[in-house]
Length: 299
Image: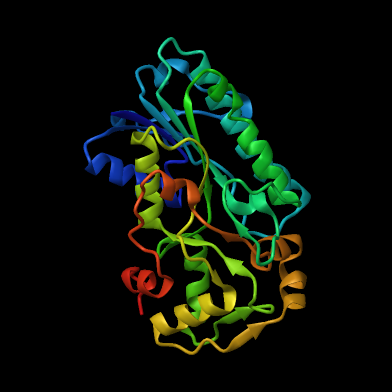
């Protein structure tokens, strides 16, 4: 297949592009800078509405992973960029696809489990209503931006990613330094749920969403067994053969990271992948301890 990938240079995007290329697909990377014409890269600029429709002619699938990083202290300007990078990019892609004489069969558009807000111990599948807060508002606007593709009859998958685990990026890369020093431990009470998934399973789930007509609409891309923060930190310490007995008080996280600390580090989301499992997708990693053993952590 000929598959276009936006956000191809990011943590998930790089792994996905490598996988698709290795399995025989032709990948068209949509990049904002540093395009390599010899590889067939296409330059786009969501903030200016720049995307040449001809670049997507003949594409059979589009995967949109583009978006400003969330895990930094939020200023008013960063919050604006977090939202606009997602909404503008998705809007541009969806409207461009609608205008094609031969639109692709499927659009896989990134979203996030942040759409559910802070929900305590509630078990959340795709039928759960959106929550409240900045990230929930962003995710709802993000998903709504794909509506033109849905209305055009393009099978649209809204991939709500959880905490993606891989050694070369994402949340785990930020966690590893203190844990390797033996200074890791739970955040706040440690009772908040963490819905994790390995990078390998994320790539496999996107591939499955591209090829399986049984997958459409909101899809939680998380492993079947979420864990509490206390259990997560225990398992990570065990995998690294380091103690994980430190505690970072909630007030310290709020002081250091402000609103982001509350929404990302202390919020509880107990999310399950009901839609993927109904569609027949099989996760490679379902138990956190076993998954961490398979990730090169540089112990």
